[in-house]
Image (cartoon, rainbow, N blue to C red):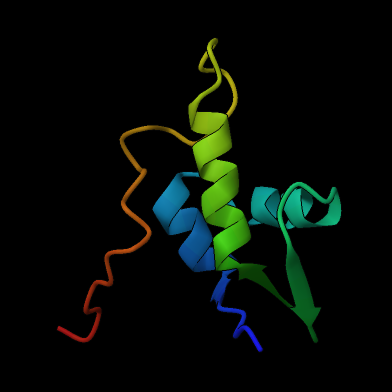
Length: 81
């Protein structure tokens, strides 16, 4: 059984440069996977990483996150400092 890892829309927005609202739109439109638990959208991390990789390859650069906000999703930062 594979464990599905979720991140909050806030974390996805912080890592990508998208707004939390846009992250929710991506989930509802089926472009990334996620679930709504009560009032909170949670993003499937693997799906989100794949989406960022896909849009990062777009030729015109119009689609995808602002490049200066993109960070390696595999790096965990300690926010308890």
